[in-house]
Length: 101
Image (tube, rainbow, N blue to C red; front, top):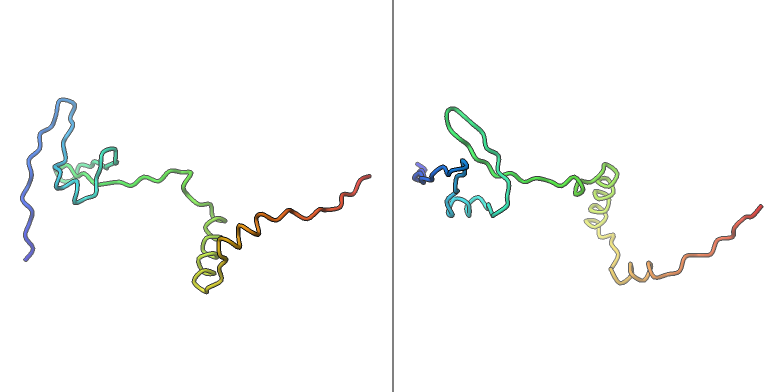
């Protein structure tokens, strides 16, 4: 039979702020500035940690497909060492003939 953690008492502050006890915050991995969702559920207040994603950090469909392809190539052992990649990037581009009219 699992033992239930005893309740920890906090006080609602002047601006309706509630302090999450250190032990609970550490167990949940909460830190200053983190986001939480606050919900009412059956006469109780439920506070849940939330991890928000910056829209700039989300891959497009094409980027996601490229990433899957790259991960598969790495698993199959098809990879390039960084030194070789740097060398390839240092090469001067081929000169192309321009057509002028």
